[in-house]
Amino acid sequence: MSRKTIFYIIFFSVLVVAFYAVLINVIPGFSKSKLPPISYVQPFSFTDQDGKIVTEKDVKGKVYLANYFFTTCKTVCPRMNNEVKKVYEHFKNENDFLILSHTSDPNTDSAQRLKRYADSMGVTNSNWIFLTGRKDSLYRQARLSYRIDDPNNNVVNIEDDFLHTQFLALVNKKGEVVKIYDGLRQAEIEQLIKDAERLLKEE
Image 1 (spheres, rainbow, N blue to C red):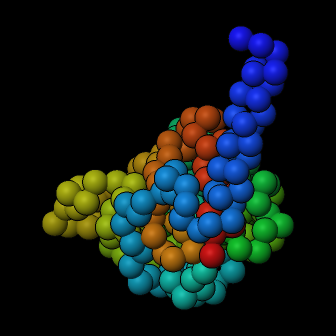
Image 2 (cartoon, rainbow, N blue to C red):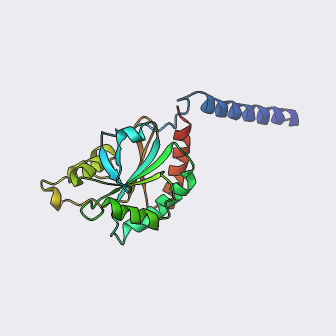
Image 3 (cartoon, one colour):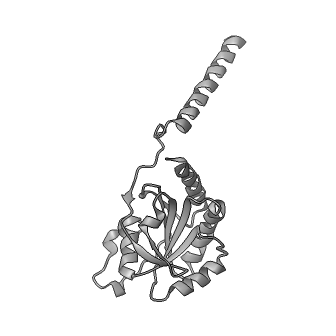
């Protein structure tokens, strides 16, 4: 094979790759890597760490991460939220990205307690929201909207129920849950950041 032939093969290979890259960035939905929805966020109403009501209308048109924790947890939650903080630091100046951290223990985690927790995590702006509310509503949102826990885990007496999960849900601007991540795995947090960046570019 001549040097000229090799040159043309390399040249056209690079040209094809470049053309495909342009199509992915210019034509919405061209890339087959687009994340299909797992579920859809249902209406909700919770109270944030500042005592304000937050509903699905407040996150409309935003890309956001949803997770569950409780302030007295000494095992999974601190490790998970340390990973979530990496996401917060990456996107804290991005107006269209939010983190919604819901308590699994609303009987303990009042808005005031969540405020102290947010301060301890070094949260200085409104991108990371900590939520409390009715236990049954919080759990229903985790299981039916975000799918980070099995819906069949619901028990007859809500007081006997307890949610403890390390999983995170990523929601796109349309309110679709597009992917679930293990909040204890650094590689999955890094992938979440990449996926969120791509979702932010979508119309």
